[in-house]
Length: 227
Image 1 (cartoon, rainbow, N blue to C red):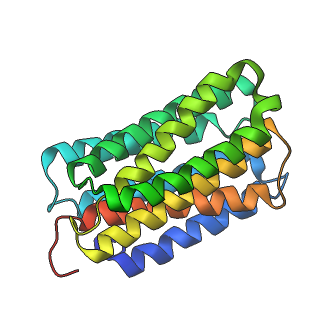
Image 2: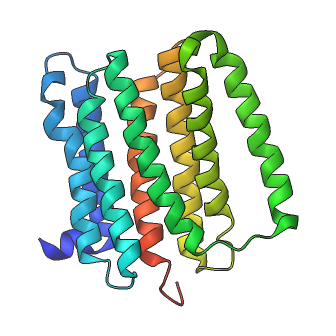
């Protein structure tokens, strides 16, 4: 059992199975009430994997990852119900998740203006497009949504600035995870404040689950050499 959760390839297969089972439960009205069992195993399984693979990390990095997983766990419980109040509480939990991950990335960031300017241009364009479409739907939540987007993009920026400060595999994994997180949040934002995009439920589950996997794997690998 330990080897199944410790090794990257075997754990990835287990993790994909959990995601696929959760997808089945999500898209079946009869099974949907049992999603508490399937969805929570996304974070629980990541916690087990991280427990067996965190020896290369500093104590402050380990603590921040555990906090991020805890906040993710709470958010996953709350967001099974799509009432607006629960959505807002879930957003707060994920805001804390992003702050934890952003802090970890900050420890390894190298501020290179030449690399940062084109990246900032891209994320500014993304922000303006999202705000344009969501503006009428968010109403009084406009300022919290803007803050939420700002924190998301700050986390992604810090992930981007880890270039050459960590090994290539860690850098790639974290960047993939950060992009998947933004994709997942974009689908959720349109679902809650504009109009649902095609296959929203399926894409949110897949992008969210894979975001967590790649971020955790990237952090696990960041202090290793030769990856």
